[in-house]
Image 1 (spheres, rainbow, N blue to C red):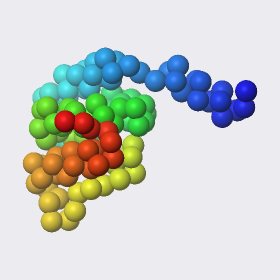
Image 2 (cartoon, rainbow, N blue to C red):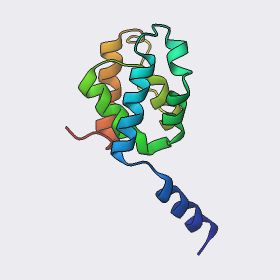
Image 3 (tube, rainbow, N blue to C red):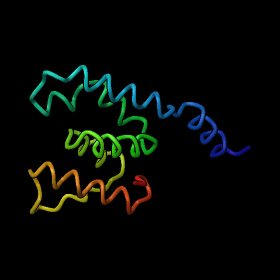
Image 4 (cartoon, rainbow, N blue to C red):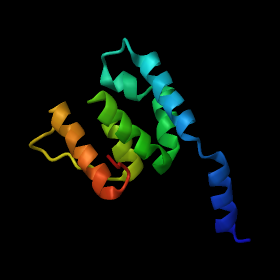
Length: 113
């Protein structure tokens, strides 16, 4: 077994289930429900914990955007994927920004409607 195989094995054993990811998302929503400052919301430890799980959480974040509308997942998605489908002309328009990420997710195979 190579070092890469060992690392893959560790990652697979520690990757959260879809239910665990949903629980983290809901815990973050609950913990930040009354915070209007986006900087404070995205600096919350649970937000960073979600990001730390990497690509495995991308489908859940996209589904959350799809099911609940605009949310503060744009930075998390950009940090995780290294992508940013939000063009300058839609920046600040939460509905259009959400649509751009959902379209990106469909094209990237992370979101199947």
